[in-house]
View (tube, rainbow, N blue to C red):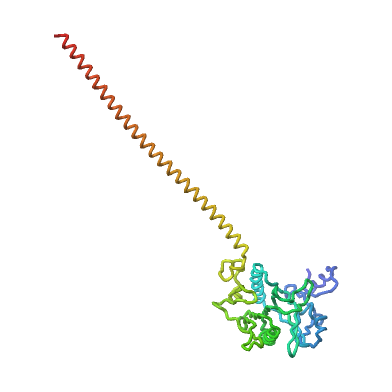
Length: 338
């Protein structure tokens, strides 16, 4: 019998296609592991030039980095609920843009540069929108975006204070400075969720982010006119396939399905109306036939009654004639005897 300590060696000897030996930890459901020395190390916090960032770190295979005025900043991993929320919101926006093709989505965290008065940063929004009217559009093979996104969404991670500060303070200032028209922060724990819209100050000399206040719990976008969602739905995650029944979403969710459904209902209603009309016509004909039959039977009854009366009259006439004949015979007989 093979012992637990012997199994890795057997696996090694049988795995003739493997070039690198990995040990197996059979106490953690056969999950592979590597030594800490071979695992890639995050470069979070180191200082590099902008050109070095673009050359080495923008497309790093192991970590997602942003660049903050010379310093690398590792983007945190989303939690499970944030991932579900992002999928839900992307689906809703996809439905909207399918009906209203006024923009394109960017879901691959393409970096874009933001130059401010005192510094320069490179950010990779979790999700972004580029309007069709934006003068800077993505080319087919671009690995970064040379313009400014019209809407940015960040799914906040609170595993470290610096992550919270980065999304709620740093990026808010940076996106405002770059004039990103709308900025959404979505926190799976609801604490830091906020929605901002770029607004001119009273003097008209600058811009600030004004919070988008929900109306009856509904957030409306101006970047995507007509797009709206219930804030609580970001956490309840209702099935997008059924939202065509909801007044908040039915103007853009599965509109083609709704049109097809309405066309079918219209066809069914037309068929039903025609069926009812034919049924009504049939009943009217049957009613007319019944009336005719009743009138015919009444006439037949009347005719039979007349015939019966005539028969009676004829019988009575014949009886009278017979009686008269008999009386006449009797008279003749009586007269003869006399």
